[in-house]
Length: 96
Length: 198
Image (tube, rainbow over the protein chains, first blue to last red):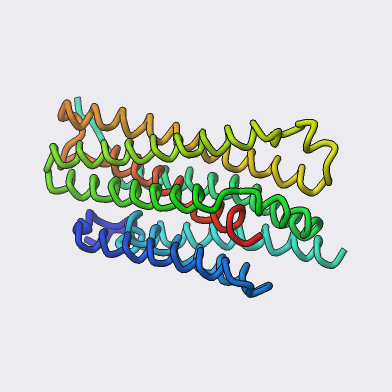
C-alpha cells in the first residue's frame, strides 16, 4: 500500500553526521563572506546560505525527504504563502 | 476497548502547527526587513554592537542539539533506549549552553543601558531603538521556544525511560524532535539577519 503521509524511514547516524558537518561548513562560510565587504551581495549570500541550511535541516533532520506527497505539498503551500506575504509587503514598502 | 492511534495524523498535526510558527516568525522577519529598508544606517550601527562570537557559538550549539535529537529518533526507532536517553540528554545540555550564552549576551547589553525603552535608546536615533526592540522581541520569543522545547523533550525523555515511548511507538519523540528542529530553523535566519549582514 502506498501511503500519502509516508512511512517509517530510519536515517542512519552517518548520514545525520554528514548533514551536521555540511551545516557547520555553511555556517563558517556565511560568517566568512559577511566579514568581507561585498555590499548588497552580502545580504543575498547570507540569505541563500540560510535557505540552503534550512533545506538540509528540513530534508534530513526533519525527514521531509522521506515523507509522502501530502506533507511535501503542505510545506510547499506554507512556503508560498510566506513568500507572497513577504513579496507583497515589499511591493508596498519599496515603491511607496 | 480498542484504542485507535493514528501516528500519521499526529505528525500531520505537528507540521500544521509548525507552519503557523513559521508565519509567526515570518511576520517578525518581515518587520525587520521593512525597518531595515527605512533605517539602513541606524540598523547597521546597532547591528555591529552585537557580538558575532556569541552568535556563532550559539549557532554551532543549536545545530549540534538538532543533530543529537535527530539521532535520538534514529536510536529509538532501533529500540536502543539507553542511547536515546543519552542523546536527549545531549540535546538538553546544548539547550542549557545556548540559554546561558543568551543570558550573558542580554545581561551585557542591559548593563550597557541597551534594553527596550531605556534612556540610552529613547534619546538616541529612532532606528537603533527599533533595531533593539526587534532584537529583544525575536530572540526573546525564540528563547521562549527553546525553553518550551527543552521542557517537552525532558518530559518525553521520562516517558522513554519508563518505556511508555519505545521503538514501536515513537511518534511523541518524533514530534518533539520536529518542534526542536523548528527552533533551530528560526535561529538559522535570526543569526545572519541580526549578527552578520549589518
